[in-house]
Length: 390
Image 1 (tube, rainbow, N blue to C red):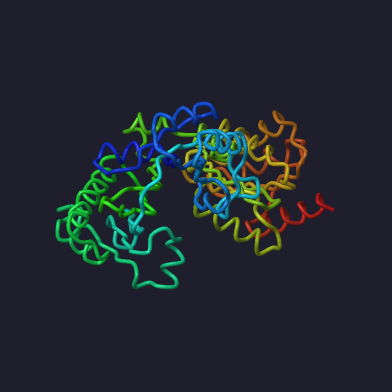
Image 2 (image 1 turned 90 degrees about the horizontal axis):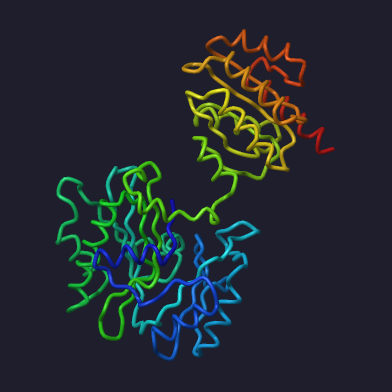
């Protein structure tokens, strides 16, 4: 789960990480009032959306009048912001952040994440802040320092000092970095965070470290421990179908193809998508209904698939280990009748009671086609999709 910038900065403040003074608002008049309360002669207006690259897309503006703050707010709110990280439709802007500008002397990069290879928390630091870290890693890999944290002892002071030397910090700014890094580490571990990124972490004219931007991702599997953080979820920033899928315990990701997949098991789902591609088609989604799926869950999965107008055929690939194939077949038949299914459905069943499941499908009186194996199923699904497109 992603947090908005203003939400992440609220967490930063709790852990002693300084951020620019600012207020999140939802309309132009509130934006003007926020600017008046913040004071000063210039303000930064930022669209609150779950994507990077906002500045290049017009989602960050610096203005020097109160009317300018209101105008910038009105221009951003209620519209979709399209960046290089979003789809062509972009993401809707429902909130903006009005902040005081920062006196920036230099920009740094600081992030904390899970390294799956070392199975450790890793700090990434670079003196080339304000840039895409991917570009820095590709063009100047030596400009990034990775510090691996042993979970038994946690982040050590010597690691913070090493980061400070690497960044070329001195004096009080050098000491502040340890406070920032220790605060980030506690924030990361205490809130089950999967990624926190400050880009840029700036050094001001007074030598103060400020988190000017903030990106924070939470581990969905641990949200049951953090009700306050879970309440910050903004469904408008996510694919609507994926949000609905979560309610029914379905793992669903929307893709751009025409052959929909419904599979039990993530690995089997990936193999199914690969075969669709191999046969000349393109998957419309990733959909894992889970190893212990039920007839009701199958029905909801069908409804999700049919909500995508790009879908021209459906491939159901079930391996009955924990779940019985005859129960899945009954769920498919029930769902097909319930939603008035008109698309061709190709079903491949293997495992517990697979033969009985295939008999139920063949005798249903509906256009439910039974495949002999997965390759045959993929071939039929791709051919059926192409016929529908034609």
